[in-house]
Image 1: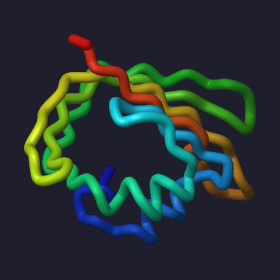
Image 2: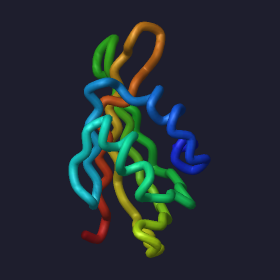
Image 3: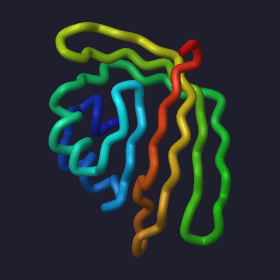
Image 4: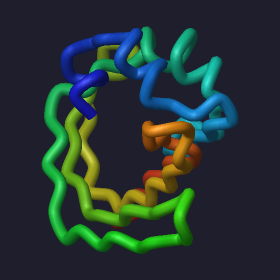
Length: 108
């Protein structure tokens, strides 16, 4: 999440798998959409993670689920949510790349 808070597009791009998919309250986004469109439209200001659960999915994949309290600005309007996240990673060479990231609000 540091790439979002520091607004580092290159760091975000490097951590995402080529086939990455993000699902959030705004919709479903491909890697290209996240990096080239969504990134500019939203400013993440706070991201507090808790209640972590790590799941091994073989030698080349793993999952991480956690609860998050986040604050962000979208279209100039501040918002905050408590959500659950599932992040699935795929190993690519020596690096782990984010393949799927879904964030679901706790209270709809």
